[in-house]
Length: 294
Image (cartoon, rainbow, N blue to C red):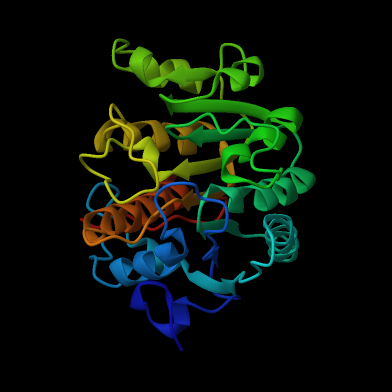
């Protein structure tokens, strides 16, 4: 039995796990860098090669269990893929566990956000991204990666962080006072607190790896300069888990390339860090947390 990060099978069953992981190896609408369909494979391979003890939180998140809930392989059309991800997410949300998804390009998030938004009221979608992804449709499809959060913005409280690229037509859809542009983050020492003031209640976090600066995450579809750095991003995420009830998250746009390993390892560590923060801080965790070791 293949398990997440090669963890023991007893920590990888549905009943023993507090976390579910769905993978979506889809790359049907990307327009420049191709290879996001290899993202889940690269991520899972990198995960098997990292240490499972988290130094910062003094925990071993895998002990809380991670269930590999299968992959969504539907790729006949962007719309069919979105529907398949929606149905899979809806099915998994029947279990009272943290839902996580790894893509694939960013269009995979449309269906999962839709399903999570139907289950949880007052949802905030926190988007870490280089691009606004607010086109109503692109290349004839509403399920294009350039439309990744258009629907979320219509239905939910969308907060965007790290944005440094968008089309002029998208500006009318940018949520007022809730888009934290990268050039403003660079000049604002209080940007994390400013973001936190807009995020509350139930939260879905969607992370496009191009949110990070290409110096630390080069293997992504559109590596825009001027991105987020590792530790400030972790600081933001930790504070979100402390303040809010994170109900789901996804990580997308890991692309295969000759130098994919550093970005794959960053994605693997990012995912595991988020599990550590979830188990230690998340508001909805009423069961005892891992005790800190002396």
